[in-house]
Image 1 (spheres, rainbow, N blue to C red):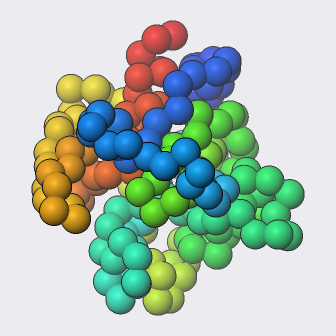
Image 2: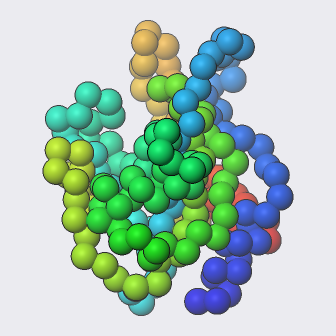
Length: 199
């Protein structure tokens, strides 16, 4: 899978436009003095099966924020984290049991701003071998995999909407089987698909 690794690396080289949960809602005006917290998420591409797969989680239904939603392993940068890459790797260890040193980071996507006030750096990494997945109790209900080819197919993405805080909000979705992948997760995957499509 050297070619895939190199393709991912090349797709992440150089600056690119940042994304946000508001990309499809141009009428939204964000306050200039808003304070955003740094965070990192891991777009983990596993090479342990016949085809490359992306590891995703389903957040626990009892969580206060985004219960039941599909997400990457990841979270806010703590004081002890060297940077957002370290935060993403630490959270992956805590949330899905990814052993230290197993993820080979190949690069990062431009920052994504979430509706909840985070500046999220998507960290793309290769996982060459299988590992024993351990979902963090109370935080993660499920850990599953989606073919990388599916999320790199820009035709697989749809635009849907719902009413949020009294206004219609539009967002990307990239459904896969029983999993409804939408919002920030779908937007970041779409960003990777766009960059991979340019090399």
